[in-house]
Image 1 (cartoon, rainbow, N blue to C red):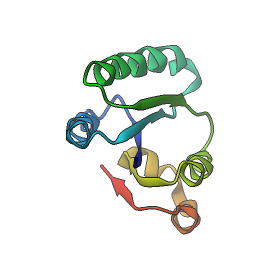
Image 2 (cartoon, rainbow, N blue to C red):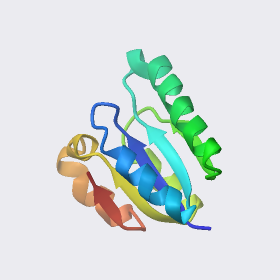
Image 3 (cartoon, rainbow, N blue to C red):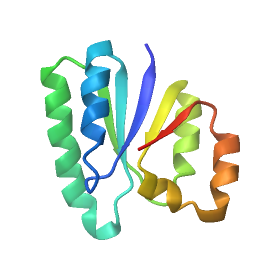
Length: 113
């Protein structure tokens, strides 16, 4: 089964379109968020509500919160043989000048929304 990492940004609800699209294919989704320290509880609640929606649709999923930089998702992508990473533009821009290193190390396609 293919694994899709979908990085969630609550400020940009475009992720809902990806969830709806991948529901049709029954691909396993890893819903991942990189909240600020003061947003951790809020993001857990938010991710659990998305998880309930996926569970009702019988879609396999995992939830995770990460602290630090986006580089932490590189190991996850390699470990689970990720088919694609879907990332909000706002998070990608935080990489600054390190974006080239990130892209070189990522072993699957990246879709920025």
